[in-house]
Structures are given as C-alpha cells and as structure tokens.
Length: 111
Length: 117
Image (cartoon, rainbow over the protein chains, first blue to last red):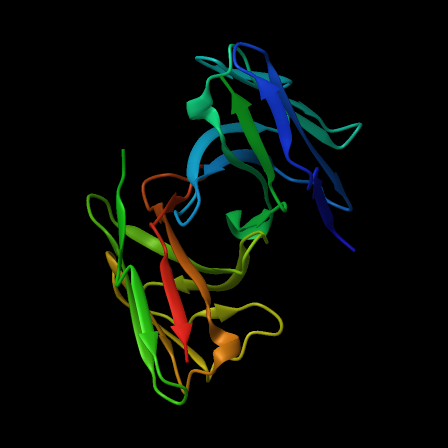
C-alpha cells in the first residue's frame, strides 16, 4: 500500500542551526512533491513544490531535495529562527493532482 | 497570494443536528476544491474532491450521504455534516486550486473546528 512517512517525533534545534526534515514514501510515483507549514489550529501554508525531474529547489532560507531513486525528499531550513517553529507536512501529488499528506514533523527552534 | 476563506471558523452543535461549512476562493476561480479532515496530532485526510457543477468524488470510507458537498460556483463550495455525532468532531479544512494553473500548490483555508456535544 502507498505510504508517506515523516518523523513523528518533534525536532528540537538551536536558533541559527540548519533544520533538516525527512519525507520517505513507498509505492508512489509522484509527479511532484510539496512541502507545507502548519501552525496549531490553522490551515497549511504552501512553501515549495519540486517536480520529479528536479533534484533541488531553493527559496530564501528553504531548500528541498527530491530523490526519486531513494523515494525521499529532504527539507532544510538554514539559519533557523524561533518563528520557524511549526509542523511541516510533505505532500505527494497523485492522479488528478490530488495531494496525499504525510503525518508531519513538528519543529521547535529554541532561542 | 491567493486567499481561501472558511466560515465559520468554529462551531459547537448538539448531536443530531446538521452543520454547514463554507469555503470560498476570494481572488481566483477554483474549478476544483478539496475537503480534508484532521484529527488532533494527525495529518490531513482527504475526504472528497469537489468539482464545480458536478458531483463530488468521495474517498473510500467517507459517507457521501453524511457529508454533503455542493460546489455551485467557481468560488464557493459547501460541506454539510448531517446528523452530526461526537465522533464527527474534528478540524475541517478546505483547499482550492486556481483553474489557471495546470498543477501546483493548493491554497488552504484557515479551517473550521467542529465540536459535537
């Protein structure tokens, strides 16, 4: 069966460090993959989209990699700030551009 | 960026009553809107895909007669939870895709917290 796995344990890092979050998937061949940020009690906010033929995508302090051989995407936040604390969701696009979400990883950046 | 609104943001109702949640795309036209449900500390689970002018497509395990979806215009979709029960208490989130884009991001609403007593 199709599965998307994100580390369910919270990631705690110190301000200024680089946060790296992992998204692994099985039995999928997504056309593209997206990363979203979700704050408590709020809807997700789109961050980045990376297509299957792209290895890396950057936006300001964010970087996403996509390895279709390993079936893995890594999401990096450089020079992390306490304001980056949130839950980060990866989502894979399937047929009809429908998204399937991973369970999310909660990031806590300590000052 | 594109904005999606939801109304109400929260609602408390008695068991057995029906609740309607509205999802609006404010500055773009959305041919397709999606309805998700999220339980505490869990991820978003797609309930149904709503296409303007046609019947919604429901995911496996989602009762179409309980969760009525109407997508009457390119900017409005509604989800009605009929005969709500406490187990329907959840965070309901809609999203919309801009009809001008072939693929890409979904714009999410702020969510509606439903509590059924």
